[in-house]
Amino acid sequence: MLKKMLLCSAAFVFTGSLVFAGQADKVVSSSWSGVVTDSICGAKNAGPSGAACTKECVFKKGAKLALYDPASKKVFVLDPQSKATGHEGHNVVVKGTLDKDSSTIHVTSLTMAKSEGM
Image 1 (tube, rainbow, N blue to C red):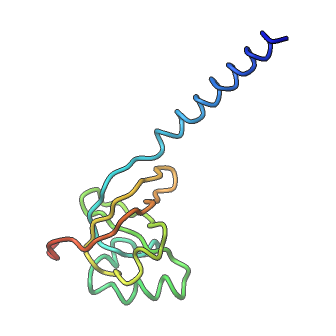
Image 2: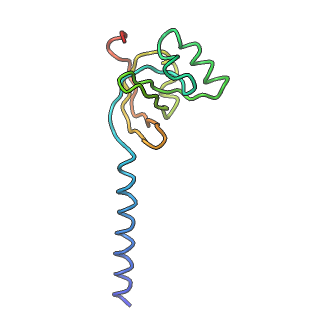
């Protein structure tokens, strides 16, 4: 009986570790530089001239605030949204973890970039 319990426990721990190992590939901690935009227009609204449109897309059309990374030409949704509110059109540096499946950065910090030129 004790052997069965130990064997079952070991199997459970092994299976659980495989599940968590698979999750590690989907989440990446890093920092990204780019412009706060929205998830509908993306690169089109990336910059000071698109800030008003970004705000409208978020408040009236249900878009999410996002980061446009000009280096990779990708748009990443920012979570929580409150960290990016007020930075529409700004060049920023975002630190956090990237969920590759949903292209969402879970923000730990968001700061203004040192140079505004892109």
